[in-house]
Length: 516
Image 1 (cartoon, helix red, strand yellow):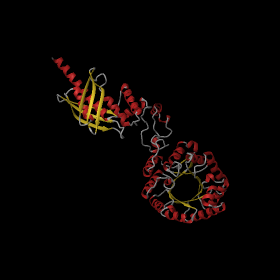
Image 2 (tube, one colour):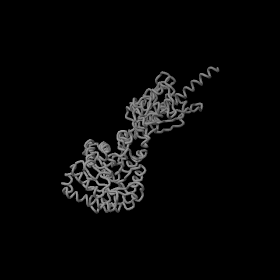
Image 3 (cartoon, one colour):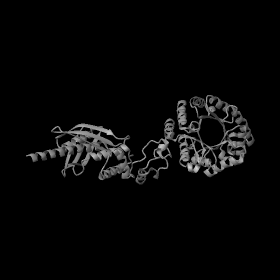
Image 4 (tube, one colour):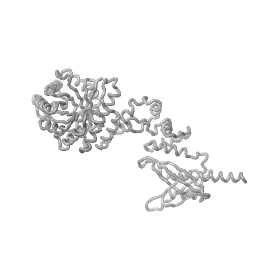
């Protein structure tokens, strides 16, 4: 298998994404992480473009060792000098020289003819070579450049000392088959290309950057230029994590490998996302939150039985952190059961069915269900007395509250088959509801302790209410309940506690009758 070098341009082309502005310390942090990731080349910046870019390349050159540090330069002597100066401390250095070669760029941007471009390439690649052995050359907008002219420019660059030739699809115009054919054309028609590395640099304007890069590898390229999370101008660049995992997962097809430490991919993605403020979409390939998640009951059952039924990569291979069983309204009992068993919670078939039903009801209300929610619902079900044992059942609850009215509540309870109504006011809606229940049930129970806890984050979080009741004989009864509504969770917990107290009193009375 051939090795494919990974050239990371997150700190140069990636930073050109609108809205990104990294400081020097942040660039150094990313560069260090890229070193841990194992990229072959880090394009640290475009030194002539700004003082900040120059200093970033300079600082990265001092602290990152073992990885090639690259600086970008136009075919202009002052650019090359700035790049060489910024790279002075680099253990391994590369100067990347470029010039536009498409007719549209030559006519409207450079206002130069083909002969002038050839001359610029010859002079400036040779000048860069006087500072550095490792020289990369790019004919900008190569995918819209006349094939034979592109080959002539490349031949000139190699004669002048270029060691890597990059074929940029600068505006994301190429199609995979077309781009692969261009790579093959270069290899077949540039006489001095033997021994020279061939690189790709693709943009994602048509969503084809990864496909084009892989087509180039298949055609003979041995370097891919990419960015973390696919950052870059306009629609972005080739996503590094995607091409790396494509080559790893389908090495049988590409007959190629990289030396990337893929277990650092997820960590690198999260760092870049955090520092740039560019969040990764949930369904982003490889490193998105949903990349290894399964919600469909059929898929969940398959993954539980054998991961490879629906996962072509291992989440551990990229250092992915997250839940791969996503619980929602499409989930089946198998997924719920697996989560609970992992947490040593065993439910009966009826209890499991009840918890699954509650999950579907919550999902229908557009709530994201998290593992902690599932566990809380299961514990709530385990703590349930069972419908056949309930002496007190909630039939109706009304609560009225506001900043200019006294909170009040009315409850209708069914006690031993008979409906009773109670009303009360309180210092808050929960207090009012509690007093209304007490009015119906009787004064023999007193609320001694009340604790409220949000199980997960967000305003739609499930709430857990834990209470303690004391009866008129100083017996303590603890109960808790879960609901997405704080007041309903409180009322459910209070009624559970009241049921426990009444059941205990009934059993106590029955025991006394037996003794008598």
